[in-house]
Length: 160
Image 1: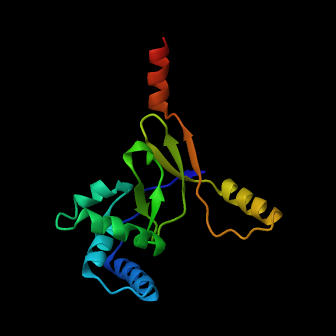
Image 2 (image 1 turned 135 degrees about the vertical axis):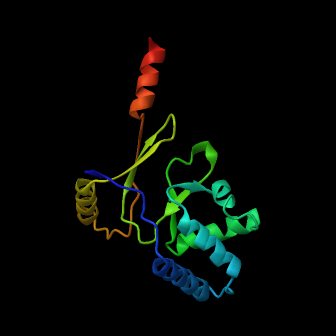
Image 3 (image 1 turned 120 degrees about the vertical axis):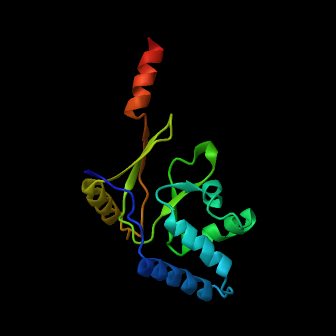
């Protein structure tokens, strides 16, 4: 098992590949090309780590919130971003999915800390389970919930 580092920044060629993927989805759905949509996509691709739409809006001062909310599902469908764990009462959070290594999450239910990790044994077991039941996997999400070390210490102090 290994901890997963933050996604490395995309170079300009990777950003262009991502935008091309988005353009193809837009074309396939019969939508018009939009510079605003691509501006939002560029902002999303530049974010390091998990983000909320409110946090994204800080990097898009000229964008309308409603427009960003309409574009986000399209970016998910295009494979540029995915919903991230730790949403809770704070609303949905997202993370870059484009050209990012697969990973799973540990989520602290107290402070919402998220640890990204990859564990090949999980990957092997889920493939075995899917095969046993005649499934062909197309994806998965593992989110393990608990208390991080800091919150466990705080909880133990409060119990004394």
